[in-house]
Image (cartoon, rainbow over all chains, first blue to last red; front, side, top):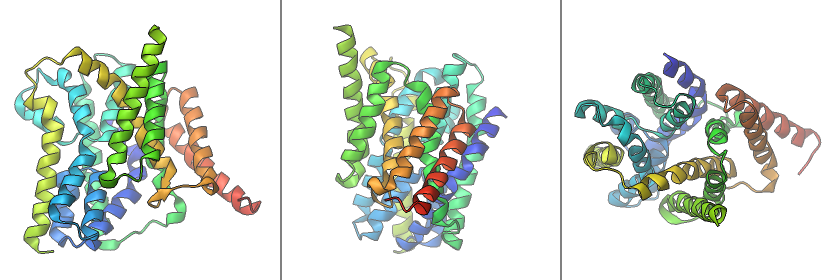
Length: 221
Length: 114
């Protein structure tokens, strides 16, 4: 239930993005049924946004799908980080956990691990978060498909998305190498923003990793 | 697009994304994680969150937000300060950041600041 409560707080931050994703999938030319299926089955806003953008620019279907997958490659890191804690679960449950793994769920898990290391109930916590996040995300994407963008841009609600990660970031950068990784990743991802296929985000993360390693080495020296 | 084309995009993306998510949880679950990978992950995670925050703040409407968007940057810093002070309290961080953004945007308008 704690997971449910924690997630309800961030739902408003995602509503504008979900609406935009819904609108974009229609303007990109997806059929209505596919536009409804997309958020439910893919469950990842940035990949949805990238795919629809590529379709709109009349890219080939292959390129569009591939670029969406490139954006989602960061989830492999989340998968690797959770893997040791999931070994004891049967395959079906592991598949379920994997299916809903997105940025904010993973971020919340990181936060919880810091507050309560080795907590045996984290899978229930995860389930509680998913119970809110997945249906609400799909719902507001579908609202976007049918009703368009109903929240005025002047509310600047899109800003709430980075804010929801600020809270978690503040807790995770209390050591110099981790801070360097975050700052390096942040600066590089913005500077490399113009790279094609949204590669800037991935390149930026790798720069952050290098910055962290560098600071670590300097500390040891 | 036809129904078939639309759904092949959805299916391709859904299956590919699931395989990415399931990669280490399922596909290579039986192998032990090498120490260098575990160490790399520890640094890669804050790098990813840093990149999400920075591009979310600095990129607005598909372009880099220039210095006339200073309320965005200032509000992000204020929220970060609040988060540091209150141990990453999520509601406080969200509210302080949004209030700061709107207050500073209003201030920018009233005082006719750049």
